[in-house]
Image (cartoon, rainbow, N blue to C red; front, side):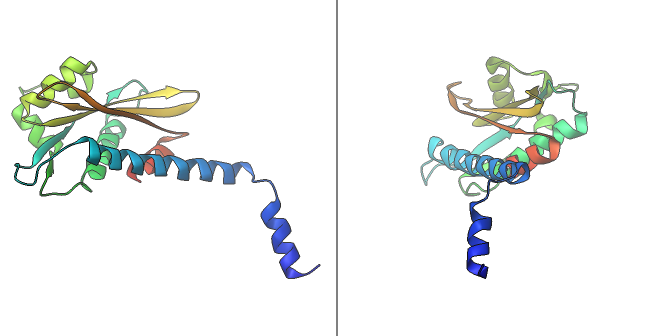
Length: 174
């Protein structure tokens, strides 16, 4: 057999479980990139308008993650939002939001749309991203919702999943 025929037969073999998982992970990453692109399209902004403030709330933690792990996932979403044009959008930090709220406010307990939108209004955000992390079919699942705080309209909703926290974070960052 020639080298070319060996390469051809290697290309035709069935993918193993690791390769399938890698493909799924890449597909999820592409979906999350699409989500960010959709968010940019869903969030209209005129060139003369002041930058829109985006608040990313702490995630409702139904997966019993540590508070550090749940906060890290919310930080991953803040980081992903930083790709939006800075002259059109300002991503609020956790610290700046907490400074505007009454002491002892726990945003991770806010899981209903009314509470999420109200929290966004209290911190002066134009848009609010709320999330829930839970377990489904032995996977971690994050559900994200984007609201307009002025109208309380749900502008978008997406999910991401991973077998573990590491693969979920990779999916959220891409």
